[in-house]
Image 1 (cartoon, helix red, strand yellow):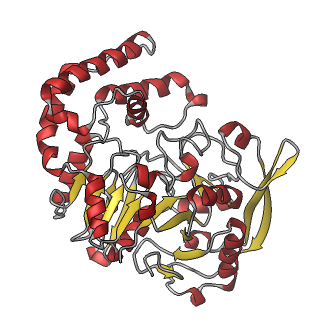
Image 2 (spheres, rainbow, N blue to C red):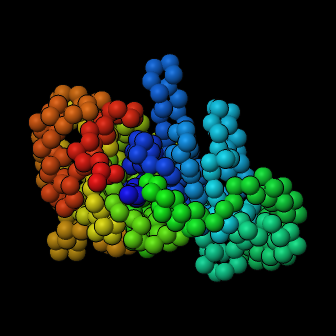
Image 3 (spheres, rainbow, N blue to C red):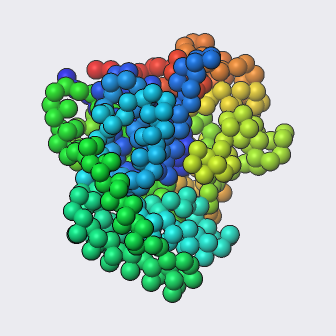
Length: 440
């Protein structure tokens, strides 16, 4: 009998989803991306010693590095065709067969040069203090066009005359804003048209009805893994708006963004670090100083190697925020938690956990909706003893230090979700399994 698992980030992204998805592919036959674009960054460490290789993926599902796994890009993903082809070429140089195993939905909206220019020009116009922290890759403007029903989608590529006509309308619209409102250079329509027609032939063999393909795979008994990008607190509806991404990052989007019914989603695994990080702008109640060497935030930043996979910006670091996680747990309907980077906390004498906030004189036990209220939240902490022993690479629960086990059990209680997996290092076997998501 098939069993399908959704993997979701529960914080502000960068929780270590790539390793967990890779680890879970041993029990799956297919991996599905269902939202976001190449603003996602999944880092996979494969092999050991001299044979170890690191793969950084943005668009292609993480399962592609495992032989025989079929990968799907659903309609909820916005597609930069050029980046997809570059990523495929990079994987092929590493000896990985991609094109026969990757299928792309014809319904994916296309990221065009005008979207990228608009994204960058808007961010520049906001000024330093009001920047959202976008990656500048055209993700947001493409989703805008999708909602406004003017987007070009993958299937449009295969009707050249229609594509050219629709492309002209989109470029005229966005170039007017670029030139007259943002004082920026216009996007080149002719160059985009020529490039898109070239990309069309390279992409054509990989285009397939993803909804139908997933339905047939499920019917045949295949186990499917739905891979989320970004994190719940960056969700356009439920995150710290407007400091969010432009897509829905929650578990329910696995259904809408791939064309399967909710009944096909059987288990939701929430990935969370043992502390909290955030890239870019926006409020962060439990944030710590990451520049002063004797501060816990500095250890989180340096030992955790907290640099954005896509942006290369330093991630902001802070104590674990259970009140924020509680919000994520309810939105996603989490079945279990996977705690990553536990070893980063090794050696910190005392660990604070944010259990709630004071907001305008009131006590609240869950992250508010929207950035304005979150920015006024004063965190309330409880303190637990840390541990001096190393947890790096441990694969058995009973081998963890007693204080580390107590810390994890406290997170379970505060977040109201059981801890099913603990990741203690980047490699697959550096994982403690208390309950396997694919177990019957």
